[in-house]
Image 1 (spheres, rainbow, N blue to C red):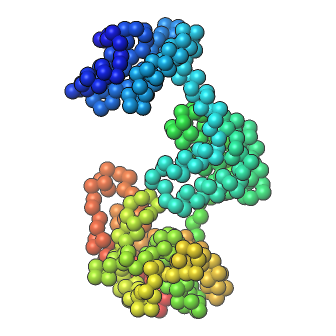
Image 2 (cartoon, one colour; image 1 turned 180 degrees about the vertical axis):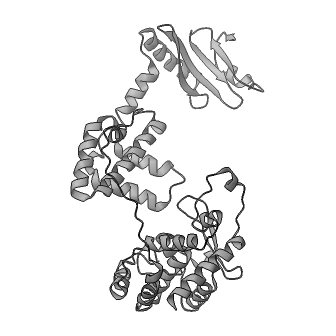
Image 3 (tube, helix red, strand yellow; image 1 turned 135 degrees about the vertical axis):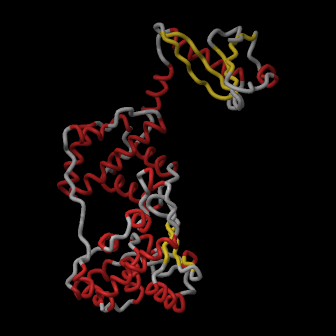
Length: 386
């Protein structure tokens, strides 16, 4: 590798980038001090053998550091290496002495571009609600025994699902800390798996059964609020998630194409659904009455749309005798679709699940291809409630 008499500002600026690969120039005055010329950047380094192994320390790019500043840092790091101390490990230990759980939570929520706002709120809620006394702790201070004890404590006081959910969030934050800050290579939350301490969770399988649909439908139509009524009907006839439906805006509905579009979904993929005749007519009526609002289901809350339908759900349960949640309506939609022998590919697109097999990844399922399945599901539901 080439050695130059003195790595100076003039040398760096007058020496061109290589057309391909990298070239390392070593300083003739300070052994172990060099600068790597890549195709875009010029980066200062310090390098020396420690116990027979070459250790390289990256100082930083030219522009962030001057040659004199980089040389000063290199001298310090090379001295550490001469004493047998790896400065990379030393830096990692130093970072670990400053990174707290609160800092990692903030970093996770700020840097993960694929997170929707609700997920960010949920992560903050779990940590601040159930681990508030850990927020100022260093990540390196949170060990497996603390995690095991707190998991049990939350399970006893707040429920098993909450305990598992809190620790899943913490596990994600430890993974993020390792990637983002190069600390905590071993995730202490994994100890729960090793000692089989996770609480078993049964997947909810409840839904509105076909023979219950008529009573449920009548219960929904007994509501005094047409917004609450139409909201629950939309959930049943589309399989949308509660927040996706509640925050639906008029500009997401194309009355010419008879479709609605959900841009922000759980998996990040936009969803375009055709509207059945029943839903199209229902939305037309709502547009005449509520078209001057931004949201299809306007509400008094701070967001401007329907916030929490629990009271209406309880009223429908009391009137119909059919117990259900908003997510049960999504399961009902999926169950009905499957019972009508709608293809697995169409079913996945209807509920916006990604294709996981190679064949599915080649199939393009547009809204018009889904119109037939949507109409069949709506027809089935309307037949049951007549």
